[in-house]
Length: 245
Length: 245
Image (cartoon, rainbow over all chains, first blue to last red):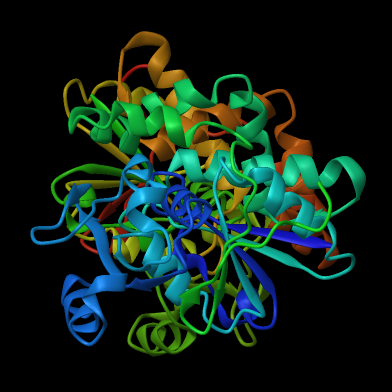
């Protein structure tokens, strides 16, 4: 098995994703929010790249069963039902609803990974489900795409990628690219302090400044949700329980 | 002082380089080769982006005082005087010559850093000179651009960036972006084994396969050259000794 880590979507090449299993990571906060929404009963999520795409899509859907969520610069978008805080996505609000979600970095990483055989939404909260799934790949390759921040390296995404690798490499040998090697090293330096990491990384400090300190704590809860969100034909699918845990 | 590390030229924004001191790192091998050539008496180096640009530029110059060097996929280009191995650039060959140099990643990082107040060519071999120079920046910002490999993260460049930061932060406090934080951590994991790192990273293994094992050893000699190559108006300037050592 070969594992590649790409630290920003700009590192994506066709060869890196075509026909492969791709794990997209955006710890703060899109991938964590998606895991929360699906866990709380949301039927499906449509990730979109722009506010305009979100509002025009929602205009064509039944508003009684559709929610509009997302952020720009971390803040809820004017006129949207929800922002990008995982805790907003309660069962009461999201159950049996379709969510149209416009976020800055996570959505872009997903759309640039088109061509993958399978895209798995990955964060600390659903780490165990993702690793169980990836462990079944056998000889297939795994590409991990970090969403980063405005096309820049984001430390929290790199450490999360490193955790996937560290767990996978407990049971099997894998060939690692430079990014995967680095991510694993960065995880080892931070494994005892994921919550502190999320508070100290650039985007964590920015979110704390906006009043989202509680989100950082929620996003750092490793293995707190048992869910495997998969992107299929532009939609992030209903959760399914991993076969074994 | 704020220090930013960008792991690939794709992370460059105008704000990151405009009016700033930019250290460009390409350990394997362009920046090491440039340091060698200038140390051995080469008068100046013109980095160019393509083989075509190199050959057409050379056609307009006095061939008696001009050398044509560079690589594609690590190998010397057909018809060129020299490849990209530091050891090729002996005093006998390069003294008082102008070198037109076409390399894949280092040249691109330099040209994408245009707009900088100053561009410093950085590698392990001239680490001390670069750090002495950067230490004089006082309150100015430093941006470190890793050339990477074909727009991908390269571990050896990241570790070299981390070494610049580790040395600079011995004497002064600096605000670090996520890339700088990660680079410093990766340096700490590799500081005792730079030669091994160059043998184990992806590009090092590739070069070893081409028969360039000796280059890896040369590129890992920290502080072996006292030289500060600066890019000015498209040329990499004559060396000057740093004021104090």
